Amino acid sequence: ARLVVLVSGSGTNLQALLDAIAADPEGYGARVVAVGADRDGIAGLERAERAGIPTFVCRVQDHPVREAWDRALAEATAAYEPDLVVSAGFMKIVGKEFLARYGGRIVNTHPALLPSFPGAHGVRDALAYGVKVTGCTVHFVDDGVDTGPIIAQGVVEVVEEDTEEGESALHERIKEVERELLVDVVGRLARNGYRIEGRKVRIP
Ligand code: GRF
Image 1 (cartoon, helix red, strand yellow):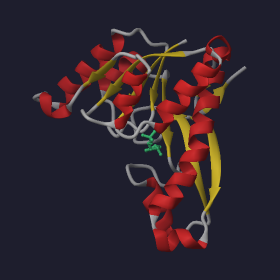
Image 2 (image 1 turned 45 degrees about the vertical axis):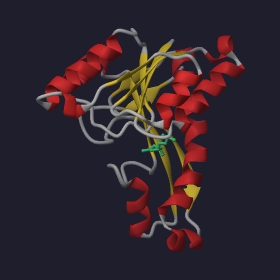
Image 3 (image 1 turned 135 degrees about the horizontal axis):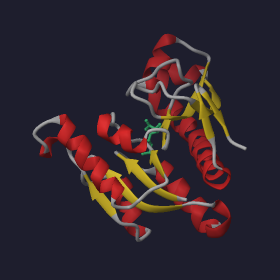
Image 4 (image 1 turned 180 degrees about the vertical axis):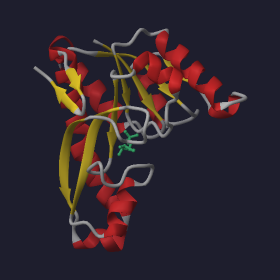
């Protein structure tokens, strides 16, 4: 399967995918054909360049309206003819046009146990709420914010120190679980195919 990976930050989830593919290019069942970003100068893009993977940047502020940005992102992505789009720390909500083209084929990873704590601050919000367990969710993207069908989740315990040290230590522990989960899920979707039936995702 051909993957386009979208990033906005450090790209450690992207790196985990690249490492898994490099370790077993045939066996993994997918390869990253391009990496897209919504901003310049991020480590995620450098990781792609280091791996010799083409990149593209699509910035909201370069477009007169949000819809034009969404269309440009869809077109830049389409140029690489992906089977799956992986949103790996991509901090933008894609729009109608992108969903029309790639609905049911966009996988997102979120650092909380959905449906709790959707949105841009899942780790902080979970911590502020005082939960004792949190984690990460890999799910398909629909037209809501972190509301699409769940594919897999990983659990991380909140420890006493997290409340003092804040969200970063907890986020790091979540990301360790998240990277493994994402690599596993994307590989299984690519190798086995899947069906989305309502809110249920079936991977044979
Ligand atoms: C991940 O925890 C992702 O869920 C999120 O931001 C983080 C991205 O990390 N919303 P990276 O860029 O893959 O290192």
